[in-house]
Amino acid sequence: MQKRIFIKTLGCQMNEYDSNRIYDSVKRLGFEKSQDQDNLDCYVLNTCHIRDKAKEKVYHEIGRVKKLYRKKNKPIVVVAGCVAQAENQEMLNREPYIDIVIGPQSYHKINDKLKNFIKGDKIEETDFDTVSKFNYFDNIGNKNNKVSSYLTIQEGCDKFCSFCVVPYTRGPEYSRPFNKIISEAENLIKNGVKEIILLGQNVNAYTFKEKIKEYRISDIINTLSSYSELKRIRYTTSHPRDMTDDLIESYQENSKLMPLVHLPVQSGSNKILKLMNRKHTVEQYVEIYERLKKINPKIEFSSDFIISYPGETDNDFNDTISLIKKIKFINSFSFIFSPRPGTKAANLVQIDKEVSKERLLKTQKNLFKFQLDMNKSFINRPIDVLVENKMDGQKKFFGRNQYMNSVIFEGNENYIGKNINIKIDNVNQNSLFGKIEKKMRAA
Ligand code: SAM
Ligand code: SF4
Ligand code: F3S
Image 1 (cartoon, rainbow, N blue to C red):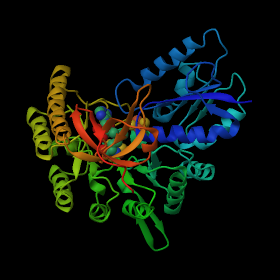
Image 2: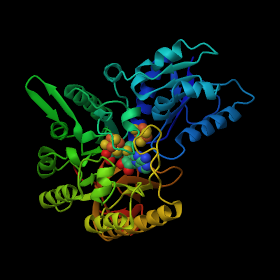
Image 3: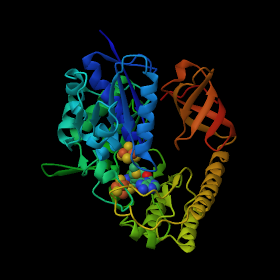
Image 4: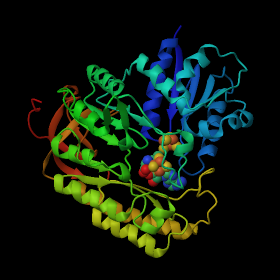
């Protein structure tokens, strides 16, 4: 009999990829993905620990499910992801409604745990068994058939920025074998995928040695670009220290590699970068930007910023604003520093809340200005859009331009998965709106 499973995914793209792989896995046990949260046999919460009250959000969410099932048979409740890894047994002790706690490097055990689950069991799986996990999922095959698909090539982090939980929740850096990545990509392309977004916590730290050959992310990008059905390649999230010459040069040779570089800088002050243990300077960052711009002037940057890291003075903060004005990032994330348990920065003296809020507002005002300027620059221009889907309950369709902006237009189902030219007539901060300009491109 078919069983119903629902996975609620919080956090980064990597969690989205993982949730899809979990669906691929549990399908073998007869679980079907449910569109709603009623009458489930299994509810999975895939969690993120990066900021704020991550742990409390999880208990809140589980409380909501508990309420929903007050008068019904409860589903098997699974907490997965980075909070599961960080809190492990503690979660089962605190909230008896949770049945299974499973960390990101133990997902290959999920079928076994669900198949043998007996009411009343309390299960905790938080080993860092990354190799077995990927071997298991390699055998299952990636069933994603959306126009744009994630593909994790690397996981974990050895960099230990002082503010960040990722090295503790995802474990040490691991790069998947090159041939396994290419096979998974081939599978996705056969399924109809037109854009692949390579993923890793430090995706450009990817290194895989086989005999005398050392594969880097540039090898993956260049190999993938030879598949004619694949139209676009992106990657995220990269670290400035791993922006090697081969990757920079890929932007010269490879027209399928999209011209938006998401390269988190965190701060525009060398003093703060040092305190953060980022292992790069502002000057090195700017040099990468200038080299890439020289190779292809169409390249634009986006970034992540942490505002009010402990010790950030007005001068340090102004250095961040100056960097934003220099690079003119077109789409960035900015957050006030959030102390994370277990990290080096957890107990540092924090900057006054009001000052932090003011700094965040100023940062976002500057970032949004450049974002809107960039969006306005598309007005009256035909741009290349890869059409992804129909919008819920509307006649409109949705796609993305090369810079990841959502583009909304009226069309029909035949355009899905195709590159078309859209003439933009209106924009806001997040989206571009337009009309189909010409006939579909032959490509
Ligand atoms: N590996 C990427 C890098 O090196 O930049 C970042 C990955 S992290 C999952 C995504 C973003 O979350 C970071 O770039 C940082 O801006 C933000 N972040 C991480 N820890 C944070 C904290 N304690 N407080 C606020 N923001 C944080
Ligand atoms: Fe976190 Fe730093 Fe690793 Fe990025 S490089 S995942 S910010 S520790
Ligand atoms: Fe969050 Fe873990 Fe991703 S902490 S940002 S889900 S790696």
